[in-house]
Length: 163
Image (tube, rainbow, N blue to C red; front, top):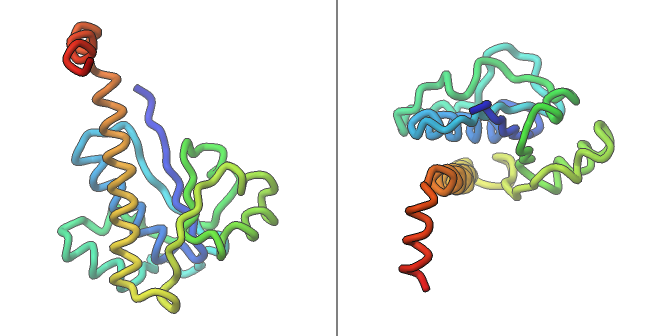
């Protein structure tokens, strides 16, 4: 099965999008999903290795290796949007207009969450929101995989039971 990609988009690619990437990749790996997340910034930080201390602390507390968050902030390019099966920007009010200006039309192909930066929402709350939404995606993908892997015979019996 060919790997599919989910793209998390944020502003600087040091906080919200990198946390979503780490949570997704850790759980996708744990469940052997053929999906991988990557993250990009609309105005990515140019500081190599920069990762929010809030993200570092949260990942360490969850025993998730920091490597799942990637190594550096990365600038969003058109090829990133093209390569992703699913695109999620972390805050509609903050990211929709810049996406529209930088990559016209692509804002229509993105999902928008409503998770504000640390100056708008306390980091603990923001990271909890991101984790919850990301785990919902994982659960949905697992359900899709489960349905795909059912044999026709099992499906036929389930139809009898549920009538």
